[in-house]
Length: 547
Ligand code: C2E
Ligand code: CA
Ligand code: CA
Image (cartoon, rainbow, N blue to C red):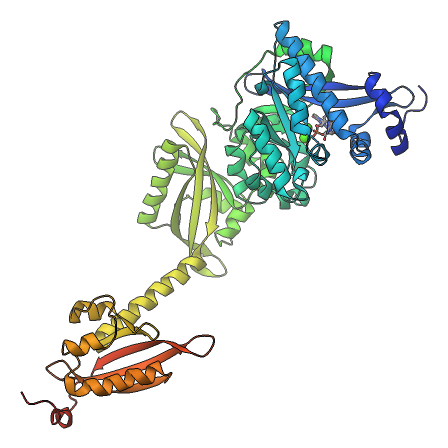
């Protein structure tokens, strides 16, 4: 073979069918290994093309072309058939049989959506149980709408296939996709984590939700080449490793030998807790964990908790900034987690730690922190912390905590509460009664004070008649008051005047202000009555009915 090169698009189209039937297109298998037990948890089937004239072709040089040429479904179904054939061989020869993942192109489901039907035909033909097959989809399968991929996902789940999100973090919409698509596992390619630090990768997986998501959905770490990467993934609860560190993709026969050697780890391990705490790595600024920690998560810290005391192990820059501190990492690490919290908040924080230990879930708490900075002096910030246990070793617990500064929200809320308090105090103080009057329905809604002190119900219909009947408005003032209400119903904006109320004829200043709807029609009026101390009602008394 002299001329080793990628095939052109035309060559790919011309040679595809012959390559498929002539064994030039075939399948390789790459093992997935549990990094703790060293056993195989599964494998991925990868398509290979070895052209007799131009040599091995890279999938990246022919898969997109097959998609464009409309041949990808045929190619993927070929791979699926090969996989079923291998699995059925393993089963009938009582060899170690591991679940195999196959790649589904988004084009597989575009044309009249026969994919699920077709793979089911093949699976049944070979009598392979569905739990030995997994389907890998990519974020790009949601391009052009979620409906199609969601319906395919539902069909696959209905039958019992496990679906994996491949190349998670390679697109811009990772977090949304995870929320929208119900996948059973995530494949996180190390190449999306390394490389462009602080660049594209950093912005994609920047949410603090990220870390907890990883912990909730089983993660397969792909492209793992070093022990350090594998160890890091294990420390965040991800044991499944697919990468050159353990195995390159190999042909069928070699894969069968490998499966016997590694043995099968049936448990589909997902989120879990690590048993030993290796905190040394967190201190090394060059380490993988530092890199991920600073670039791929929001404001976060890692701390240990042992017999009631905490120790900060690591904080990222965003954490320091979110707390509104001007201090450096070293100062924060040397301090205590409770620095600047009062006793009540410290206790609440510790209670959350204890809850997180017993529930193993994410637990939240809010606390006020007094922070000090050299330039700005003291400040108070309110922080909402979400914490999760990520490891334990004897009495020592390792925690991952993400924070959010909610000071602004808190202050707004407090101001609101404060205003309300001031308003009701003012009302009590000035002896004011207030109510709302709905013009169209003639319903009156008294304030709580009216209800308490005057014994009024929550709603009074046909206002003001019931209050005239019960003598609250003495008979001689009733007519004037009725005239007022007619004016308000007719759209008068403001009326005020003094009325002697109740049989005791206590003088009250009554005011009405009307509110209009968008068409300028009056729909509501706010009424208030304030006792006028020392006002001489004798002129009115003259008109009072004889007792
Ligand atoms: P993929 O699905 O993300 O497959 C994983 C790729 O990572 C494979 O590349 C694998 O050989 C490579 N890889 C695994 N471990 C390591 C590692 O430690 N370091 C490095 N640098 N690479 C590693 P491959 O086989 O070249 O496939 C490339 C892509 O082509 C696949 O990416 C997949 O998107 C597509 N592909 C492969 N086979 C099929 C198939 O049967 N159907 C479809 N539709 N697409 C396929
Ligand atoms: Ca894949
Ligand atoms: Ca991948």
